[in-house]
Length: 392
Image (cartoon, rainbow, N blue to C red; front, top):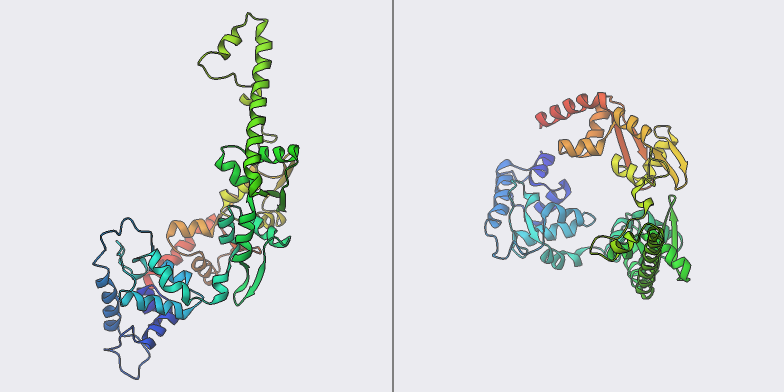
């Protein structure tokens, strides 16, 4: 009954019990000696929260909001902070904006009010550290490159009750000192590879991190504008060289190309630009393969080690063959894709597979686990899922 009550509200069992102990969850119908949750008290609590959400503020559309479920997930490491959040919602210290959904977890609250009320309730180690994924978003690079920066000592790790995390202080110091060439290339509509060659030709210092056969390059922030200027000059010289070559070639035919170059039409395109320059068209990069399979690069390497995928060495390095990827997708389907289609969690599908003796291929990497099932077992999993939903 406790789990069912917590699921109806959209909170954890521990949080529901803490709300009852703090008095925010009023117990009227259940006996005093009972530790259970009466349906009348549960409906009263849900109705109490939803009645507050019926009065949205006038500027609700212009505010950045998040759901109560998302806010509780951010505070998952501190039960005290979760209780404080629900107490602030019930006392209207944090406004409820409402939602089209019928569950309490989908009700929205202003993000700025949530930060100001609950940020100080989190433990100090949580506020001073962050995950590698969050640091990657802050630095504008991949999670693998963040782990490489930690490995070479450019970012600082700290042991916390939930594992190793990266300190915010070291991330801010690194972000103030360096910027990734990928971010510079995106902002200036060019490629990171051309900027790397520009730095090498002009002797500009680069910090290069190699992780999983991919290099990430960073430059000092004071050198970023210099890199862009040198790159633009190189592009202009290349374009000028192409035009000069086209003029010399076409002058023998009557000077038609010179007239075309000085007209309002587009410049001549080099011949190599119209050709397929792929060194091996039957292969995919590791990033493309991981995106298509919804699997990390570590998971791809483990699938190769198990013989489920094949790689080939090309002039661009190791790449995944399209044939092996197509054969794998014909035979298997990922739990992530199936859970997204059925609007459930991959962990629940894995539990159903174990209970019904359905074979599961699990690839365990250092970052996360990836599970796959055979496509012919998909109907069995869906039937088990439908039966579990009916039982609830």
